[in-house]
Amino acid sequence: MNETTVGGADGAGRASIDGATRGDGEPPTIVAEGVRKAYGDVVALDGVDLAVDAGEVFGLIGPNGAGKTTLVRALTGTTAFDGRVRVFGVGPDAVDPQRIGLLPQSFDPPERLTARELVAYYGGLYDESRDVEAVLRDVGLANDADAWYETLSGGQRRRTCVATALVNDPDLLFLDEPTTGIDPAGRRSIHGLIEGLADAGTTVFLTSHAMDEVERLADRVALLRDGAIVAVGAPERLIADHGGEPRLEVVIAGDEAAGSGGGEPGGETMGTGGEESDGEEATQRATQEVVDEVADGIADGSAVEVSATPAGLRFVGVRPEGIGEAVAALEAAGVGFESLSWSEPTLEDVYLRLTGEAYSPRAVADASVPASAEVVDR
Image (cartoon, rainbow, N blue to C red; front, side):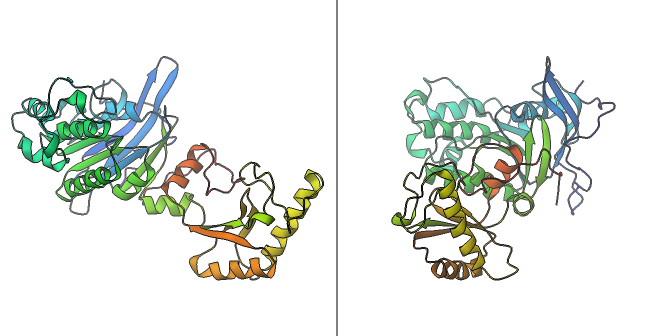
């Protein structure tokens, strides 16, 4: 029963859907409340709530196995679930197929058809469809439209698949990893196409592991972990709340860096003055002396933290205007360096912090990963 409200749901990991109606009074395109799905003893979705506005690009991110594909199937009416989903005000299995475009992550059309024939075939499944040639131009396949699908490159195949999802001119477009295998120029073209569709009023539900893609395209992002949404909001808000501080990475000059350079990320493996320390304890003590000396050179009251890395030093909390002060502290401590690299936190940092996945080169090595995160929607 795809519209039965789950009784006794505790709301864990849910995103608030209050105030989802746009300022112009238009109701959300998608509303999901308490969506649950289990495969035997494995819980794929654990009480998911979300709302997606008309004309919004909504990004869904999360680790493999988090439940993203299952959620998309629930929203498109292709799997049974417990809870309530409304798409265009009706249950997902009652939506006019003309209004929805779907690009799954895995899509294997007949290989002995050309790109043009494939797009024309899928267009023929609808009462109305866009001009095939126009769709092929939109996805950058005009010059390869007569090549068999089996002879196309991976990126060209993916463009063909995107075209089949667009040919019915949908009001709601589900895209799962739309730019997988596509070269940088092609990715930029597809990104521009998605932005244009959203500007024209199409609602886009985007699932991707490319954090830069989601950060660029999405108006809001939901992070799904273990079947529950742990955070949702505009990318810039998620980054501000969970991404951490700007970082300045310093690569120490060769004769001052550790001889092995093989320590764990964030490990204190740097020697001083080119002298080899006798034993691990002496190395750590010498390293800490350098860290302390550089840290002492930062202005009193500064929130900047200094730590050692395999390549040199990391300053956390350095704003652009504070880079000169960090350089002065290095010089005052007699620490030579080969390069400096300053970066702001990104959506990838949010993802890594909230999922607890593998080390990010920009992440603080000993940063704790919260067991749960407050769901935000701003």
